[in-house]
Image 1 (spheres, rainbow, N blue to C red):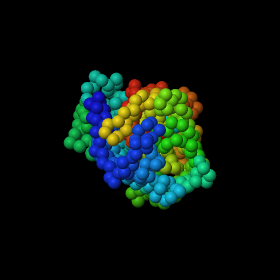
Image 2 (spheres, one colour; image 1 turned 180 degrees about the horizontal axis):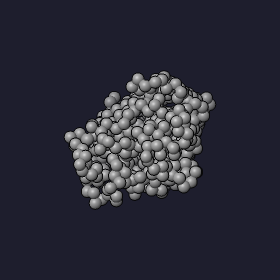
Image 3 (cartoon, rainbow, N blue to C red; image 1 turned 30 degrees about the vertical axis):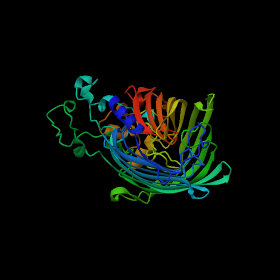
Image 4 (cartoon, helix red, strand yellow; image 1 turned 120 degrees about the vertical axis):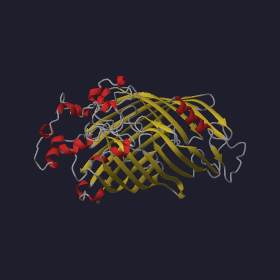
Length: 500
């Protein structure tokens, strides 16, 4: 892992940088850190090399083009164009275009995004967080079986996976009501194409031998039914949502923003509250219409950035930053695959998965919390350790200890789902599971009826390397408090930008 991290840091520190039609700043034109401001066009072409414990090692190419004009608003940019094409070792793709500007339409901020995220092994750990049992040995395969705690319990490396391709097209705009109070509106569409994992594709040239034990061979056993398939069999996932669907949406809300800058702010507030109405005009693969999944969701987020220490040169060295938020379904029914998508007023990152993983609760398995509604909190101290220049580029290095938390506010009623999707053949989940010869307690926690509401918590440390205040490489190491959230002792992520 050290070798990959060294290559990644080298790629950041040695970019191919070009300045087109750039005006040389006057000597007195410096930013708040006493450095010359950036003007004109600035762009770098970089290898898209990263690591995520849930997605694996990533390889590809990306570019982020900034236009600063005469530099009068630096470190704010006039235009930002972002393009990325990459693929990971766990068969997850990223193909993305993003545009952001406050100046294309004078007086309004406009963000456009078009993204395609094919995922051959999307995480699925069941509904209601701790109410669903996680069995590490069922998917923990190692080449050396001596490293496996209970090799005889192994089912499949993709037991907690399913195939999911996500297509996202969105346009969002922001206008000013009065000073820092803004109105927001957006249109978009989310397209989900869902199926069981393609075992033949994942096996490649490896052929499963039924005469041998599963744990003795790398090939996946095509006869093993994964958790996603079991949920369909038990009636927890209905036929009308089992293959995905297309969901155009419209959203509107308000924001209050007093941050000193958008990327890595040192002080200020960011508060948003908005509604998202999602329709369901058809389902994927010609399945029946999914009109029953029209729904309305409400989101609220509160972010606060508090400067704690400023050095004698006026440089802020320590910032206390925290974010609390919630997303809840207030009308209609949302399909299960949309309940781990965190709505946002402006699409600035590739992933908006929640809750769990490097984009929401660091150190927890991705999509560990899946319910109709949830709340979350992220708390961290941001230490700016050193600032330095390489050529014309301004860099900084920072450290961020953090604590993350997530809770369910609207759990699924599992018995109601079963009764609905089996047309009353089974009235309880226990009946449906028993009919398939499975043990209910292997999949669901029976010790406490309030398990769904138990908080999920993680803690860890982050490393930040930034260039020109806007391009930030983030490496986060997080560990779960409860082993039901991840039986690995920690997860590691290398991504772009701050979490919030």
